[in-house]
Image (cartoon, rainbow, N blue to C red):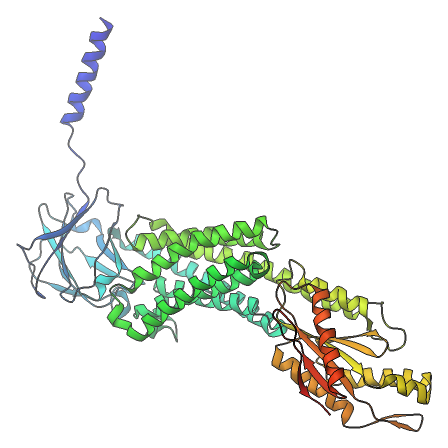
Length: 566
């Protein structure tokens, strides 16, 4: 009996559900294929593809290949919209440009609708607003003609009301302005830190922030209202170039920030290859421009989809190997990279990820804040190392210079994990030629005074950021953060300042010269190895004669090259 009751109940429910009317489709879009550039609706044209929005709040998303003839869209709806309902159709696009030819439902004449940046509805930042003057009468059809240039970008079509559109656009514009301002301020701060320390890790991150902030602004459509950016808003190559530049700078920054040359040297080459692939692809865009607009973005997004998982795996591996800032990197960049990959997949049509668009700017701001905090901490630690070295009480009692132990500790701190292996620096060992003869001829008191005056003379040619210490006897050590050419110039200036005029001590005129051994820092090299190369260069300089400078060469063996000799 119970089974019969349940069977009867289920049968009644099925009959009831079958008798209920199906939910009306909110909007249907048929993309029509035409062979020529028609100015009137192609009623009998074949349908290339059809897209449906079931609910009024749903948006239809589509991306059409670039085509000179453009496309005609046929719009139908099973809803009945009255003229007084306040409904409009909104068409959005990343590179919405040019007018649309629009036949409203229930109207036989066409209207030319300008996009928001060229005289369209002012409250719209990017896209078109299609009015419904007669509402949407039952069984009516609307037609929209999209130009070929506009068809290359992803587009979204949905119903809205003017108040809803105004609230959304105003909120998005305010958020985008705040995000752009925050990222540009952090970029300026990073450039300022780079000016102070001359390390690419700061400049690279500042350049990434500037490119990313400008790209997001162009993508949002707000750039058309800003002086200096309005002319770039409608040029797709600008946005693509900025996104690719951001990727290039991000890869270069990641190599330094994660200390990959020291921890994972082979992996560094992999990232360099990906970086150069992006550079080559960017050159293709800059050289060929509109000739590659139809397919260039496919390669750009494919490179992004390749680089994102690779970068995350490398960051995790660096974190496991003890990279001190890898935790900051993963915390800040993981959400950003995931959203960027989702957006690239969305553009390529691999998945529907509308959420990625709205979240990209937010995660970019959060990521930039986390990484800027890490870099600020690094800069503060670096400044503290130099400051502590200069304020150290462990000084040579005779000259007042730092002693050898402090100089070695400072170099150890610079080359240790967490220092990001500060920019290239030079170690110069300066030995006074014939100092033993001066001591033997004039006495130790004169020799001590000579050491003090020699230190003062060398300090006169050093930069404020350079560090000098007395190593032992008549040998001084100098650390200067600079490139090789600058360090060789510094060595010459030190030699010249001794050769130009004699020292006057207790009515004695003492002519002195110096021999200088110079070694440039190398990634992954220990401090003792650096000192050993500098000492070898000093021995070569001393063997070459007085007033000589030699530079240790990197590689399998050290070969000193005499740059000047008396």
